[in-house]
Structure formats: structure tokens, C-alpha cells
Length: 289
Ligand code: MG
Image (cartoon, rainbow, N blue to C red; front, top):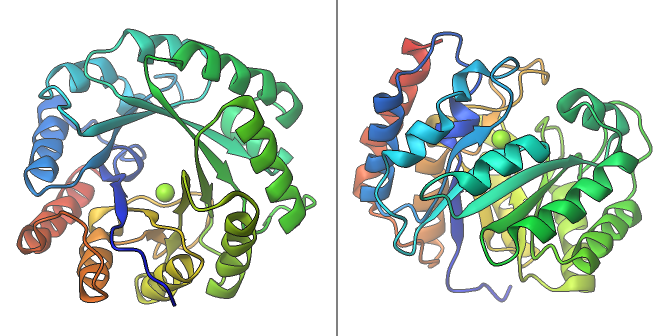
């Protein structure tokens, strides 16, 4: 296998990990967590989301969190947006560098998650490309990219078609996501390999969920396909509330990064900080559950 030298790991804990907490996490606690992640050298942090406070009350302090952070200075702060209103808030926010839009290949999940059909979502992507041009980076998260638990039609070819259409529209960064954590390593490898064969590895990422013991096999499946953009959360916090398996979370950053370094892949992160950070992430998760 011809491995690349560097890997990018996006830490999604502050958003993906905290957004479903039942008790409000104080803004200063979120900010402190992000500070510590930066101190450890994590280059890309999913910091917050500009979504309706009615649906996701935990993220209603998005502006305040970003305002309290140091200027990005070459680092990446990403926020999730799901509609035009969120996009406008993101464009007006301080310090933000990227927005991420969740776009599902499953009609059922796209409706459930963004209250919009797939067909009606394409023009929104177009508007996002246009509005972010020269101002913010745009990442599209293509979910249900490795199979569809709702029984909607799914095929590798459909994933490739969606990738082609997004690229034609000018989307340069696309992460294929397995929201439920149900895809086996073989399926992950198959889809990513086909995507790399058609479009190359540039700007292609994998956002995966797993049970802790299954995380590294999935990481290997990603690397073997030539993809070097992975996403994780310290202590594996987050995941999908619909998955129906509490042990399925984001890939645990403190497990993934040492594994990558052991494989000779540079991550730029101070690994010695990770155990304590993972403890802290798990503590916050329990504290505000
Ligand atoms: Mg996730």
C-alpha cells in the first residue's frame, strides 16, 4: 500500500459531541474545551452549528462561542448550517473559516434532518457555493454514503453521481458520512476506492461512526482507499441518536491519532495531551447529559 505522509483529522467533539446534551453547557466551558484542543495542535475543529435554537438549543450560543475564540491564524473553525438562515448567521460570525452542510443521499433522512427534500436541497447547495465564495470554505457532508438503513435506494453509482454533481457545482470539500455507524470496513473501502478512482483523493473525507472496538478497522479501510481526511471526537462522544446503539459514537480521536502516528503518518498533534483531553471530554459528556 502506498501510504501518504500526512493525515488531516477533524475534531468534531465541541459540536457533534455536545449538541444532544440535555443540560445547557455554558459558553465558557465550550470555549475552554476548544482552546485546549487547539493547544494540543488539532488543526480543524468543528466548533458549533448555526441551527434553529428551537430544535438544537445546545448550539444557540454559536456567535458567542466563535467571538470568544482566538483568531484562526491558519487553523480551521467549522460550523454546521442546514438552511439559508444558518448560512447568513455564519457569514456574519467572527473568526469562522468554514461551514459544513449535511446533505443526505437518503430522502427519509434528508427530510428528517433538514426538513427539505433532496430535490429542494440542490438549489440550497448552489446558493451556499455562491454565498461562501471568497469568504468561507464550504464542506458538504454526504450522509448515508455507505448504505441506507431506511430502505431508500442506495448504490455506489448514486454516491459517485452525487459527488460529480457537487464538484460540478463548485464544492471542493466533500466528506462521505456513515451516520449510523453500520457500514462494514469492506463497504467503506469499496465506496471510497471508487470515489478516489473517479475523482482523486483531493478534497475527499470520511466521517465515520463505530463502536470503540471497531474504529481502527474502519480507519484502515479509509487509508487503504487513499483517503487522508478523517473525522473523530475525543472519547468518541457524539454519534447518532437515531442509531439505537449507545456505544456507536464518533471515531475516538485519542485512539485514532496514535494509531496513525504508529503507521508513520504525521498528524501534527501533541499525542501526550490526548489521554487527559479524552477524560475531560467524557467528563463533560456525563456532566451535562
Ligand atoms: Mg458524527
